Length: 190
Image 1 (cartoon, rainbow, N blue to C red):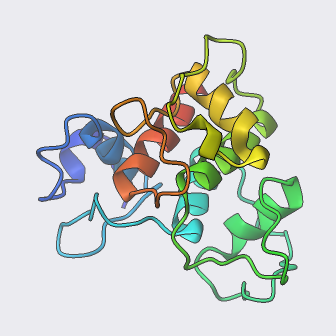
Image 2 (cartoon, rainbow, N blue to C red):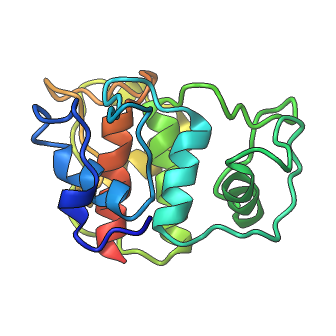
């Protein structure tokens, strides 16, 4: 069901206290870019999986490709995330694991989320570089080299922020609420 009054059609009973994420969650749900976990709940503090995040990201930026073919051993044609993961691989947004898997059901780290979002934004030609100074995270030394440019650019563009006390927590698992906010901020740049 498409919703033309986005903030009245989709409600979740567990996001009322999340002023920083509530609007993003409702807006993406109204556009059928994200779903709840059942019984009118969203599960904002639950870890977001690699497949869940990528599906939201690819739908929001309109990058899904139903003709892309999987090269990952653990991504099958009948998987609900198939078109998003295969399109992302085709576009170079994801590369997968060294063992040939994607790790669809694994929790995504904050630095992995930043990298995927950054690559997708670049492909969609969204203005995520040159906006401002990157955040000075006190734990920046813990950010993997492969994700450092993405974290810096995305924080400079105010797409991604820290988790308090000037920390980025690069290895921490991203939550569903954090993912929704990042995807919605990119969606707004389209």
